[in-house]
Length: 162
Image (cartoon, rainbow, N blue to C red; front, side, top):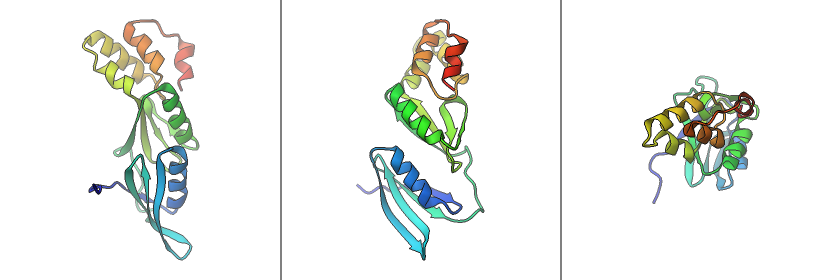
């Protein structure tokens, strides 16, 4: 089935650099089309895990904001670490698993365990997980689980997740 709704990302002049960056990070990705005007990319499309994205080199009129972010579900801490470390390179870490990449696009790199812990049937356990998450930049699954169970988390361990 053809995808009916496609995110369309507006870049100043570096759309080709961006799609090369994104497709280098995600294993199941590919560049689909590149349409040029002379040497300059006008529009392009690419896929990440079967999700199509369009890009435009539209000039400096618009910038990305946190009002739109790309949410990446991760099964393991290794996956969180891999995506986080690559996407934040040249960008800016933010709270609660969010980051801005070097192009200003916001991403949420979120382990599935976070949703499970925040939705725990024990409200105290869910609250402790939430409190731990609010202190993090990159999400640390082990630290979340420790907090949810009521274990003390050392400050040095908490700082290592940043």
